[in-house]
Picture 1: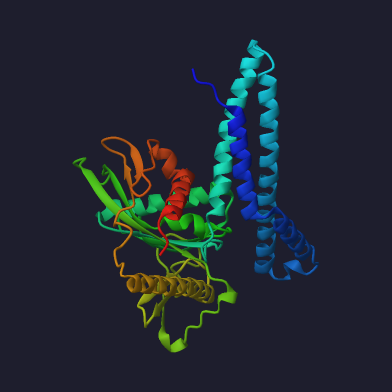
Picture 2: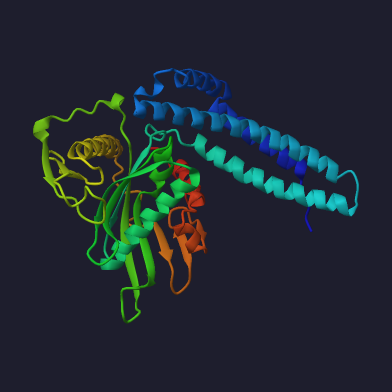
Length: 372
């Protein structure tokens, strides 16, 4: 049986960590932590709840990133000591220590890979929070049910990472599932991570809604946009927006289905429509809808600039097909990303939010593509 060349592995790990540290800049992180700590200790911090939450969240994220970098260096040092202990003799205890070293090596590789992926998120909007919209596509009630399954998958992913979420809008289908849903994931780099999830998702299964038990293929679209900040200053003239108010629909509490609190904004020049109904007041829904509309207009502008560059370069081919991932539940079980070829057989775990490997593979795939 081949033995692991720990000396070479440890050198490689240290090299990868050095590259990550050069990009992450621990000294800059310490300065940022110091500045945020000073802001967090201000006596009037919580006079503005939204601003206070942003400061405390940013501080927690920066401290976590620095701690992970420091801990990774210590883990590699400890691995080196463990290997030395295992190779000092040839007894059973040494074999157990060597097995422990093998396990720790695998763990460090995985965690270092996750750190490395973050260094690949250098796009203009990658550090932003994310707004995710899921829409049922072809496939009738199965597509609506699939849309709800995907929404739960992403919310569970966020929950696993401790990321706050807020559901902004849900449009329920008549029989089951969702026509569409929009929600925020409030964490730094949420957009950078989830942007690779955008596209058409396909589900193949025996339909629970078909009394003949036939296999059904259904589709759902996932849209991911960065959440805009006040400093972005996207000016939208009032005469370019049509505002409609209506009564909220679907399950809810006391304020749902009783007042015309839901808001629909239509951006007349582009035809972009944003609906919000999950807040209690019309004012709150309008503010939330405006944030999402501004985010979509920012992304639209970016897409137009990118398309113009491609046209000028003479390359008008689309780089993505209509379908980027398949979820197959029958006749076998498999989830496969058609861009990266990454696949897993545990479909239940994927729908329960275990999608980090798909996200990591997608980020690496995107980085490997030729730049426009």
